[in-house]
Amino acid sequence: MYILSILSLSAYQYAVILGFLYCLWLTFRIGKRLKQSKGTSLGCIGFGYVFLVVGCITTFALTGLLVLGDTIYDKTRTFTKGDKYEAVYYDYTSYESYDSESGRTSTMYTPIIRFTTAKGQLMEKTLNYSSSSKPIIGNKVTVYFDADRSDIAILSFGIIAMTLGVIFFFSIIIFLFIGVTMYAMGHSMKRYKQIAAYVGINMLVPLLMVLFDGLLIYVLFDGEEKPIWVNLVVGFFALVMTLSIWAYIKSVVGKEIKWVKTGVGTWRGEVVEKIETKTDNDLLQRKEIKYKQRTSQKKK
Image (tube, one colour):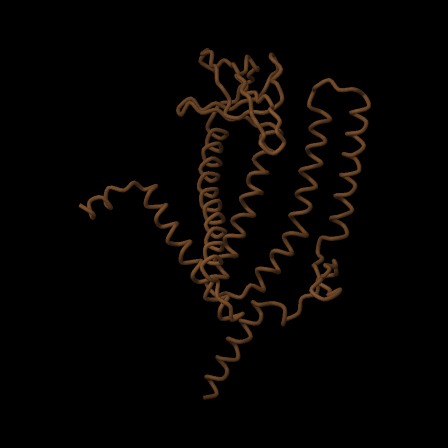
């Protein structure tokens, strides 16, 4: 009966069990490496804390990778195989959303659109996202509709910004998951830290600046009526942010962070020219070691 109950588990339940065992194994390996390198053991509380952190990172990374990959694949099929139509905002539904941190309640709106297909069929679709901005009835929006799967996709600045934000968030989580796995497996973290510093300086910060600048530009040209002074302020900050992006990229791209000790237990990061020697490059080091091993074997 016990074996039959195990065999009757669903794929989701198997995934949960395997994920739990994997996180448990990672935590054990991390504790073992910490004991070897620092001579300290995690203990029961430390083991539970590390397991909780590893479990959260693993869950977010794997779930996000699967869900995000499936969503991107699904919407890409709709964009490539679907027909393009001009739809209008016909109606909307609303609900109240409570923020426990601020104690405020906001109204969220889910748009309903209408469009006519190439076959003359009138379609009415409720979009799968909500926002705090009330849709303007009668405004047009470009949609892609796949009649075979009855799936709809919208290509707009807001959707693109939201998608990029989600991809950006899960990319960080997946990068952390790779780092945790590498540390648990006993690999050197030197190259990983170099990549993290490079990505942070050359990609992460510029991407955040571009997204914020894009948000300002979107607010400036979203079509809603605003006082002139609001447009002037938003336009000014958008211009400043654009110039800041250009200045940052010009001064930082191709650089690296050099950590300078400023006191007991305190460090400061300085952006310096990136100079990489053979001793800094792990790949060149491994090739040099293999070359020495081959030459020494030939001499023997």
